[in-house]
Length: 329
Ligand code: SF4
Image (cartoon, rainbow, N blue to C red; front, side, top):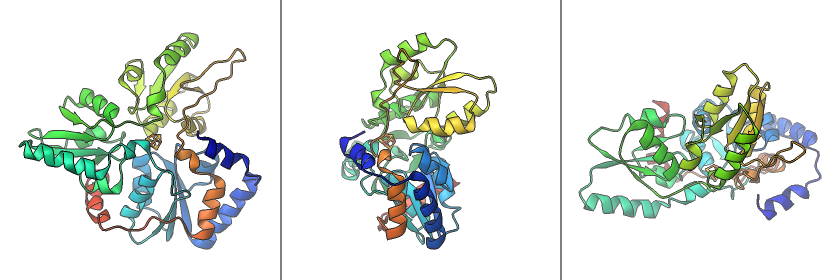
């Protein structure tokens, strides 16, 4: 977490319960619904109308009946909500909440690389992970999330090559599970890159009988040690399917512990990397600095001020056709 974000939080003297009441009243007054990603603070998830992973929230955004959507997540998620709901006003609590993974694939560089492949006579389709800007989405054939990637890749004709952007780790994992050859874009997520294999091995040794769950954005060496590989919704479903109290080592953004605890409180969850102190306490430094920009104050302020707002751009139309066929059909 950056120093700037720490200081933003520490200067706030507002009572979270008062803020929650204020947000509830503003939601009614402004005819608004709140969508919150599993990676934002638990207190924001608690006041949201919809919570989930990228796939669920993209689908939920089409079910919202209010005229305004507040998207507590990162910028590309707000863009996707606007693309799916052009007639609605889409607000995000902080315009600077970006995504290192989305930033690793700028649209001009992708377009140039696609031109280069075409000039070489390569016959390919481009598959993009949902963590991309709307401008990138408008350049690709398919959009996938960690929840539906396998199913979508099966829809790419077998005689086509696949250019997969932007996450090289997810791409490598998908090559393994689908058996398809892919050209991988060299992008990655700053949060999922930091997991230390040494830490994971150490905690596993100290926690007999534990189950390791990791997001497919994690590097291959982490996935090789993992018992359950899956996106956030798959993790939630998995812990709910097990009755016996179990200790899970969770390798993804640390805020994910909140929905897991709510869904299956009988288990113990240890975020990875977790340093087990002599007191038995754990700590983790795997918070996404972009997701952490979302605070209750900013949710309240954006409802009150009607901004920052995601504005419609011409290329959203093409991105919409791709999102539509990939996520809704
Ligand atoms: S956790 Fe990684 S992929 Fe997710 S929003 Fe943050 S930087 Fe992007």
